[in-house]
Every structure is written in C-alpha cells, then in structure tokens.
Length: 256
Image 1: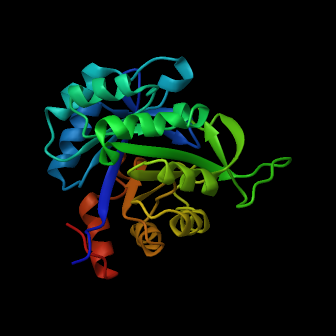
Image 2: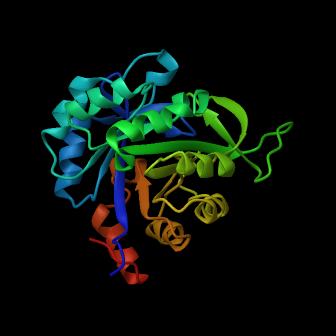
C-alpha cells in the first residue's frame, strides 16, 4: 500500500510569534504559534513544522517553552528546528515535546553532527533542512543550486543536491528542501530542484517554498516528494489543508 503523502503547515517563529515574508525578508506577523498549531491540528494537518528562524543568526537555541506549549496542544507529529548545534540540543527539544528535530546551519559547519545525532536518537528523529537557491553570479556548482545558511542569508558555494545526498548518506532520516528563490512568492515550488534532489536521495523528501495554489502542491507531489510544506497560504487563509488534500486526491495521490 502506498505511503500517504503528508501535508505540513510550517510555523516560522521569531520572538515568540509566527512570521512570514518573501525569501526570508519583509517578515509580517501571522499569529500565535500555539494557537496556529492547534488550529492546523484540528484542520487535518499530518504534521506541523516549527522553525525558529532567527535562532541560528542570533546564536541562540530554540525557545523550549513555546515548543512545549505547542506540543501539549496537538496530536500530530511536531518537527522543530532552528539553532540546533549538538546532540544535547536535540535531547532538550525531544524532552520539550518535539517528535523530530531539524538541523541546517550546524550540520553544514560540521557534518559529523548528523551521525552524532542519529547514533544517539535514531535516523527517524533527524530532518536535515536544506535552504537552497539557484547559484548567483560568480558561484558555480554541478547542479546549479547552492546551499545557504542562517535563514537564507549566507551563501556557501556548496552544491545543494550533493549536500542533500551526503546528509542522507550520513544518516539523516528526512530531507526538507526549501527553495530560497521561491520562498513566500506563491509562484510555485522549484520543480527542477525537487526533481534533482529526489533523484539523489532515497530518504523521505519534504518540498518547501513557493506554494500558491492547490495545483502547486500537486506538481510538487509529482516529483516524488513524500510531503508538501507551506506557510503563508495557510496562515493568511489563501488555502485550507482540506482543499490541498482534495486536490492531491484528485490527482491520484494517497493522502490521509
């Protein structure tokens, strides 16, 4: 029986509030993270992702109190990321109520962290988040995509497809692929990038960045993504989780 495609709302949290912008800039308030988590749980979300978007840039850890408060209100898996630098940080988030933990910047700085986490907690706990963009002038990679860090603010020159494959080889249980170019634009997911990463990794792949219509989710699912993630279209009422699931079912995908 095919594994059901997951529909995942993402809560980008800064200073205790959900925020959303375009390409990680021009952030505007989207509400209280605990209230939104509870709402999405009731509306049929398969998981909820909670990303502290300023933790890495600010050099601090994710706010555990907010994670705990959200975890107590929902009955679906909760993935938490932002500012995770060690296996001890992962343990703290799991104790606070997270089911999975996302790592980005710290894993790029020290790839050995992936193995340290998965050996201690298991592969299923770790999501490696890859914030990628088309290479800007002066930067070249084999795939044409570059990994960024610190919430999309810093280029690395690292090939995004190769890094996703390496993260999976090192033990990541899942790859969350976010297009910085498409993020918040509502112009659709970066299908070419998703297709390239899907061909390179055999772990579950979460598509993120650019959803604007229900058909955008269908197009992302057609690449072989195992989950489709979005933020602003859900936060501001453009689309409902139910409408997205109906569109996916209509296209022949299995959803919960």
